[in-house]
Image 1 (cartoon, each protein chain N blue to C red):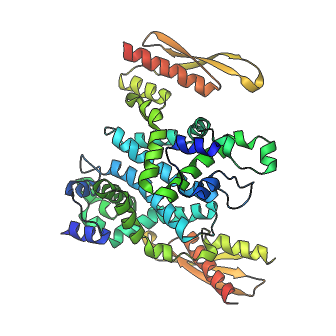
Image 2 (spheres, each protein chain N blue to C red):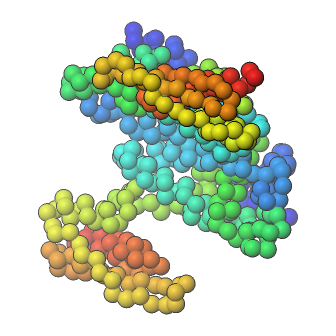
Image 3 (cartoon, rainbow over the protein chains, first blue to last red):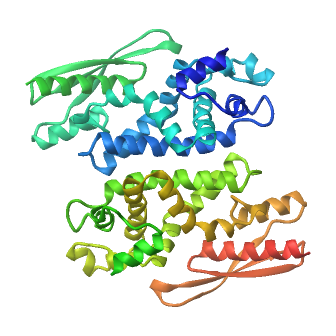
Length: 223
Length: 223
């Protein structure tokens, strides 16, 4: 049942259901588990995303493409995909992992996603797994703003300011709200030469600064 | 002429010769250069080597496979392939790079190898570039000793000694020969408990130690 939904979401029905089962088996459950599949899945993912970005952004240089890829293949992105496919429900985990909530752990879910890519390759070849990965990443790739592609907002903002001989931004913490395990940071980004400031919120100082910088870039583009 | 030899050695004749030319063009020469091709070539290489190792070593775990792959895709290995294909003779470099011997620089040659893989994919697809890379790496993969697969000799030796409750090896520099730009190091690896020693030569202290450790492992296997 769960496995049917995963195969539907992947867009690939496994000829060899043992491969699917292995991809969904954490090492805590027993052998054969999904670590070797994860190894090839990681290679396939990196390769397919590189090819997709190369085609999608003909104007970007190697460094920008590398930064973009890093953002797409990182654990957090894979974790999001795993949630979308509800991979956690179908995972086979040892008792200890089950009790400690292993089926919700981002690293375990991200690894299982990669293992699913590896299993798809073994089941059906490169073209099929390329199609699967490209479809799953369609939205994330479409959401990339080519103007700032591959650079985080703080870097983009700094580069724009330097290129226009403007003073660099000052970031300052305004506020920390919430309890220790769920803090929210508020940061202001002051652009003295441009005469405006923006604020950003986030679960870390860095995230809040990036959001403030993103706001500043949006203001600059609207100038 | 040079390009024909490279295509012969790759085992792929380019339908689009512009792709081959671009793969052989360093950024110092002008645009279009090979850096974007290198980006996808790197992804393809990592992926194809991962798949080859997965098939070749069904008994190895993910960590060992990763270590093996790192050894095969590193600059030094790509540089060796580039020398074999005589890629340097066909490289297009700017004048400054030419004068400073850029066509012999390992990083430039390794990057060009990756760009050739990227260009092959664009010219002919995944199956063809997979064949090209797998053929070029046949010897290097065949030379991997599955008993020590994925581990460098010093690590393997240390693990064997610990597993057999023997004293750890002592490495000592015996000699440094040659002029500053082409030094050769000679190192001895002493195994007190086993009552023998081996020596190693190499272009660095580390390389010499690894060779000495490899010799010790060979002796141990012959015991």
